[in-house]
Length: 155
Image: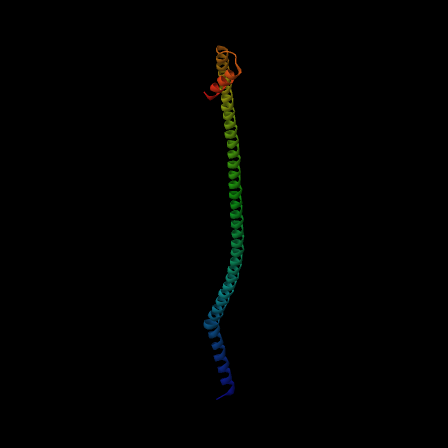
């Protein structure tokens, strides 16, 4: 056997083997590796985007919680101020009503006092006239005068 023919046969076999590997194995293998690399890259990008979305959602959540707390606080403050206003208005209204009642009571009391004075004046005038009649009808004596005045006063 000839070394050159063996070497030449081996070279042809090696070239056919390389062509076969390249045609049927190398291309699909490199294609599968590229696809897998692309999937891994896409997965990493998606994971990074997911992480960013989580961070954004966390920030938005915190912002909304702060806004809700602020709104709740303002609603509570408004309710407290409205209740204070209502209480103050009720106090003012009660004071005004008390003043009106006191004023009307004062006026009613004044009317009753005036009526009592008028009645007292009438009674004193009536008593005076009655005393004068008795004194004039009896004789003019000091003891008798005192006796008559005491009788009238007792009546």
